[in-house]
Amino acid sequence: MSVLIQFQMINSYNKIINTIFRALISLHEPLLGKIRQYIPSLSGIDLSPVIVILLLSFLKNLIQDYRLGL
Image 1 (cartoon, rainbow, N blue to C red):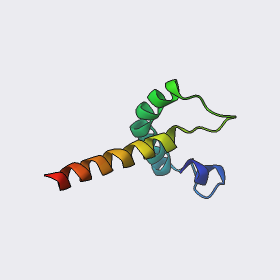
Image 2 (image 1 turned 180 degrees about the horizontal axis):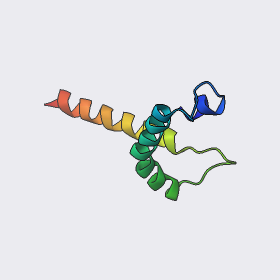
Image 3 (image 1 turned 90 degrees about the vertical axis):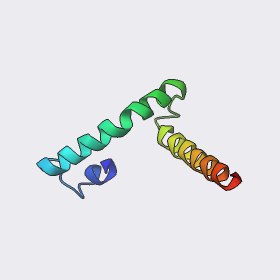
Image 4 (image 1 turned 90 degrees about the horizontal axis):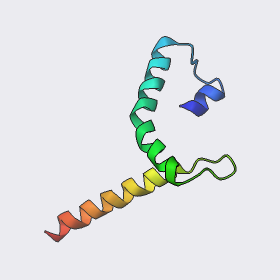
């Protein structure tokens, strides 16, 4: 959503869009902030979302394997 705002595809001055954007940030920022403490950005590139996606994928696969093993 931030990319869409940057390229002015959606208007961030719209009250509804701004509320949705702030809600999404408040949902994911605590987890991303903890990961950013341990993994610094590389030349301005933030890798924390990629790490969260990989961790979630790993957990999903682990749960599926556990369910199939029962």
